[in-house]
Image (cartoon, rainbow, N blue to C red; front, side, top):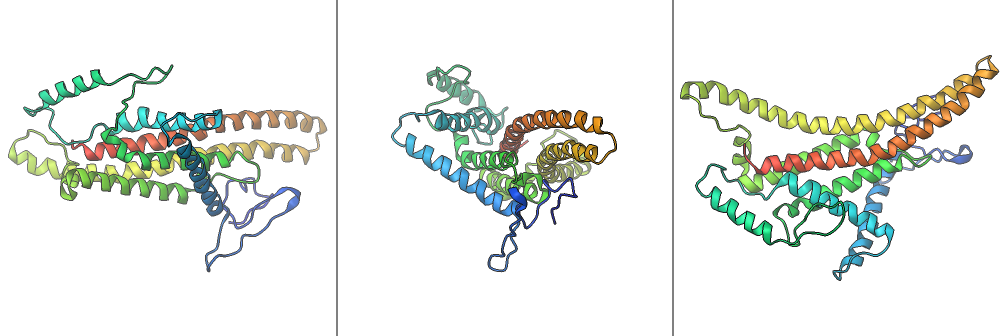
Length: 311
């Protein structure tokens, strides 16, 4: 889609050009017959940024020592937060046992004993975390990738002349499809392919005649819900990022509208008001960038946890 200054939404639309200072608009050349767009390039930038950050962090903690420096501590704290506050609580310990099974009580006792033996982390504001591996940690790389990739894509929109690729429904749709694939793979590995799909329908103590009627209906509803949840995952991220940029564009458009009006005093009232409003919305967008990355990672982990635990 072409981007132009006559379109107040040019900042949130994808295009084949980058709008740079001085009126420069370099057009992206095709690569191997593929037409590149601004959001394609920004997605590559986000992926490379995440790779470089965590490659550097991995080198600094490879010897078992904590990372030094505020920059590395910031990213390490985010990674630990995602692990301890999202992935492990949302996904759980795996396994598909029945809570009413005769072995459930001994297992709970063993788990309680294990929890008491595990040391607590003496860090202010941090929840207690185990020092050893957790069964849910095998899903950590994917959830980490979702969180940090979405976060960097969101933050790129705060840089002038760039944009948020996550403000495009095609990008968030692809992310949701990827999350959906991860859910299917996790559920199939834990319960088996048929067990995963059959497990979508909760077990109910019903008369046989009523089961024949209700169970197929509930199963269809659950399958539709599985697809709808991931569709909403894409729309939620897209709408929040698109909405923030749109509000900024509209507020700044007030300046141009006031400049073309016949009232000089109106321009000098609208100009500072619009700038202050843009700053306030910009700060809010920084918060939303982190919040939406958190929501996407949390829901992805929650969907994976639901997939590996039958109803």
